[in-house]
Length: 247
Ligand code: ARG
Image (tube, rainbow, N blue to C red; front, side, top):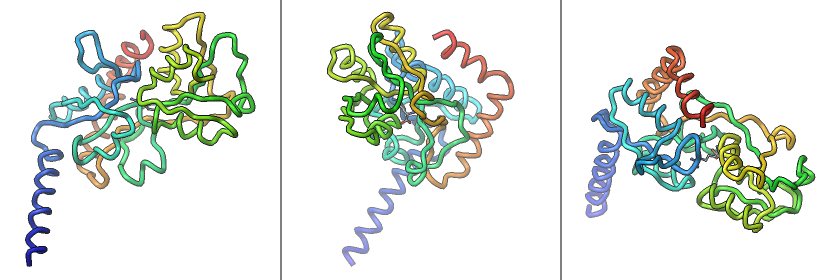
């Protein structure tokens, strides 16, 4: 009997948590990892900014939800969906493995991994990556690719930027990271680092989407409709211009 009541109490506590996070009560709590320019970063005013942040705010205003951003570690995002956060927008690639745990919105951006190297390096093929010490952001698709490279020593960083800093220090030979952040980081170290295009290594195209609680078809329908409208009315292109092309 005690067990029975304990279960009821646990169940109602869990329901309470669920209700407070995912009901249509106005607030949509959105997890991100604001260390991935131009998609998400901390702006000059100390608040999260970037393409993804602007996009989710636009979605929020169209579905009538106030957006509250939670900046957290990238590798913690998926597990936090449905508890600490409602959804995640973090330049997150749709993968079959992640699909086991969360649902994804329709994709909103096509990406690919790039390899950041010192300017003088001639790394240009998969064979060149074998046996190297490779820096990656923990739990990212760059991390998964690196772990499959023959003889590579993979060093995982909580922040992509720390991997880049260790490349500058010579602690890693290269960094595998998404194209746009690679271009931003390299531009900050013009003449010292360069970014090598992923297709040379045979990397596949990746698609970013918003990660949502599994089975919340209501929320998914709303978010997907908003995304479609945002693409159709030119807002999407405006955000690309502001955050990606001019960054
Ligand atoms: N696209 C890659 C992935 O999904 C990296 C994303 C990292 N995002 C971030 N905000 N740090 O694994």
